Amino acid sequence: WTTDNTGIIQTDKLTSGYYVIKVIKNPDGYTPETTETTVQIQNGVAANVRLVFNAGGTLNIYALNGDEVGLAGMQVEVTTIEGTRVGTYTTDASGSFVTVNVEPGIYYLVETKAPDGYTITNERTEVEVTDGEKPVVTIENHKNTSIQIQKMDSVTGAYLEGAEFEVREFATNRVVAVCTTDRAGIAVTEPLP
Image 1 (cartoon, rainbow, N blue to C red):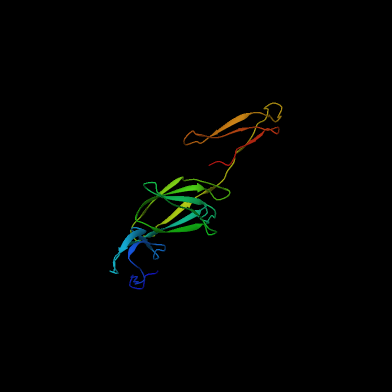
Image 2: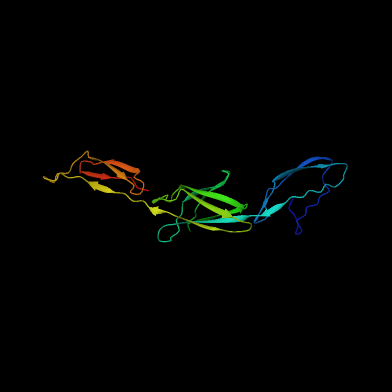
C-alpha cells in the first residue's frame, strides 16, 4: 500500500492477528526512524500506527583531475562516523554520484578505487550532513606518474644491468618503489602515488 496525499493508509481488509508493517520505499528526501514495526489487530478494532520519517540529506560527490575535469570510475565507500557502511558508489561519466537519504551526522568517504590512469590522493574525506542539507564534496585525483632511471658506466658509457634503486617520498621518506635496471640500463617505477 501507498500513503495518500495526507500521509495516511487505511484498510479494513485485515482480520485479527499480528502484522508486520515494513517500509519498502521512502518518500523522496526522507528516511524512516524504523523500517519495520509490528501491530496487533483484535476483534476488528482499528489499530493506529505512526511511522516517523526524518528529512534526509544527500551527498553530492565529484571526482576531478587537476584541470577540474570529471573522472568516471572512482569508487567511494561511505560510512558513518561509527563505522556503519552506508554504501559503495562509483562516479558516472560526468565524474559524479549522489547518495540519497543520509541522516544528519558525520560521514567518512573512503576512495577504494581511483579512475583508470589516476592515483588515490586522499584516502579518507570527512563530511558533515545537517538536516536537509546537500553538501558537495570534491575528491581530486592525480594522473599516475612513473620515474625512469638509466644507469650508465661513467667512463665507457655502457648501460648497466642489475643496478637497484629505491625511490622515497620526499616529505615522509617513505619508500614508494624499488626497481632494477634491465639490459638497456633502464629501470621504471610502477605508477607512483
